[in-house]
Image (tube, rainbow, N blue to C red; front, side, top):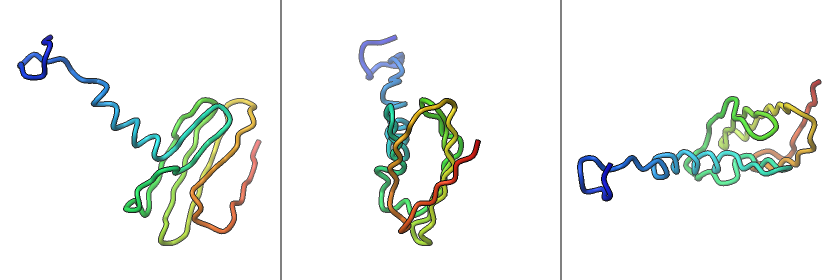
Length: 101
């Protein structure tokens, strides 16, 4: 292992390599103890997309969106009992929530 990036045996920069992954993850889903923010910071160029089985503290979420068609679908599964506040990118005039046990 070297001390600088200018030699052949330079160390691997894990912070730099995984920093981009975390940045994209935070753009898609922000999670705190009692709050889920879905699509809090997506670029305007991302007109549509989907996420499947994204894990967070007490559950997992799958969602898809299409800005041009005004569609947004999400499925949230809680792994335990906890009150969550949901905040989402406004694509539709109303949000319909179905609870399953």
